[in-house]
Length: 120
Image (cartoon, rainbow, N blue to C red; front, top):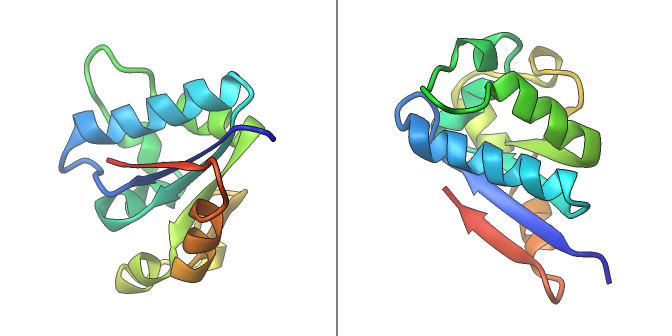
């Protein structure tokens, strides 16, 4: 059975260290061959928009655009449906490759045996 990691990140520019940690863990896991699913919720929802990750700054941290590219190369990024709606973000607004999905999909990802889910 392939290893799978689901990460839900709730923090964005409001809590840059927690946000960066989530993206860093997701990118390292993806580069290590783990099936990664990163969920953007709450304030991290804004990072699904083009250019927003480039505006994110945290000293001594890898640039978010690089981490996003690494995650997308070996995993997937999902924006929460309700979080997107609250911010008036539509499917055509997000970075290419980012999907918008809801709780039913999230639960489906975390329920199989052996799946680890992290929330930042």
